Length: 406
Image (cartoon, rainbow, N blue to C red; front, side, top):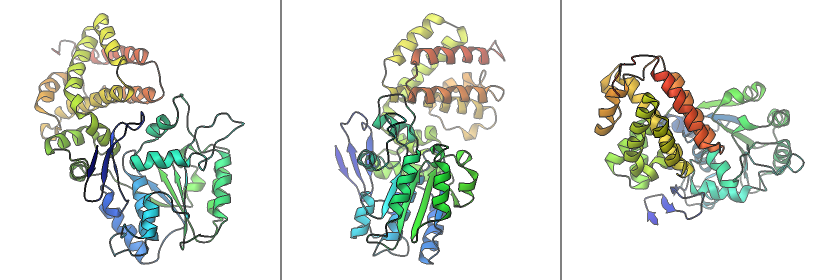
């Protein structure tokens, strides 16, 4: 299915790893959801000729920091840009948007066959381009799943840092600058970090580094100190809603439900946009799960475990993401009912759930659920993690108000 919009194309891919609806943008500033103030600052700096040689674009997963980096590059290299955006049609814009510009290089986490045969970004660029053009907001977990069925961690290795140095020794081919985009520098192997530091400390002429990160705490402090920090804020709800409605033709009521659950994570919003029809089923399963946990009904838990085990991995994750949303709502109900972001059907159960989900156990509950989502991405045994989570949930619920009627 292909839907032509103003600037974006929505495609339903048949590839097993690209089943969700994606939008492929030409990566103008206007294609990037949110971050209005940050865009304005970057535009002003470019027009004034102030482009730092190394910048760290920091934002949580789903913030869109990589699409923003790509739009930034396109604006800098555009041969016919306006005061507010790239033209989107010149030869440079076309190449940047298709990730084929000879002066724009990417380094990203890869999975090697073995330590003796390290892979490099250039070897995996075809797959990375395919995945990124299909989904500009692709997450690390989605990238790993796209390139490998095995439970392995993708990293940026020493050979890749050597490759970065080799690439940057060349003069710009057709532009005034060379760009090196390093996606997720927090997963650079410890032995490779000093090599990257040396390159950033002594950059070749006309070279701009863009480090795109979700977690700066895991980046070597000496690398961070040599970059200019661009910290992205959470995308506002109204901009998330506009992004979904204009790009994916999501109706208003569905878009509102999605952003309530996604809570500023546009990557997650795109996932939920495809599987939004599952939310009533998720609510039904969640009610069944909470009751089974509260009563410690092992048979009921085993039956539900078998049901969820048979789902695709993305639907399993969707269920747990939904539980995080409901847990949050139950906690919010204790403090300010006006801040609730739930549907009427959800609210009826949240009223009961708030008796056993409270500020004393919410942190532990959310940590457990987030760990379950993380484990699913790494192909953990679903039945084992579900039963472990259920028993922990039982213990935490019974810690207060055992007389609650769930």
